[in-house]
Amino acid sequence: MKNFMDYDALQKFNNQSWRYRYYTTTTTTILGIETSCDDTSVAVVNSDRKILAEYRKAQWDIHKKFNGVVPKLASEAHIQVIDEAVEYALRQSNKSMEEIDAVAVTTGPGIALSLQVGVEKAVALAKQYNKPLISVNHLEGHCLTCRLSDPSIEFPFMTLLWAKVIDEEIDR
Image (tube, rainbow, N blue to C red; front, side):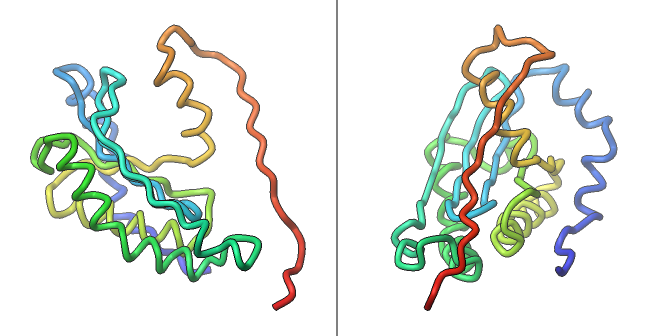
């Protein structure tokens, strides 16, 4: 598998000093990109736990005839809508990239070809606008969403994740 991560761009994330700068001042606004499988999702959220805008484009119509996700088709569908998704989320949130404090992107686990689309878009935006890039683990993101809607949940807490994986060979 080809390594598609741009570690120069992720280096900003490894330098933890930006967190102090952003999280100790005013409200932080994040542009989040998620392309780990077959849905393209982009959102603008802030540190007050408010979703300012969101965009989701499902791909089930593309994949249902194959009874599962086809990685190459998923990647191509992400490529077709990723720019529109980012533009829509920014427009709906009434924010410009200059007003975004950081860019977050799912970096795994997921389908490599799908992840690549989101990571490349996030890296490009982070570089173009000189924004910190936050690498998000897909499964950790699922675990932490409960805290977005219910701030009274404190660490440590327990989460159960369940995923149905179809391990059948599809005749074509």
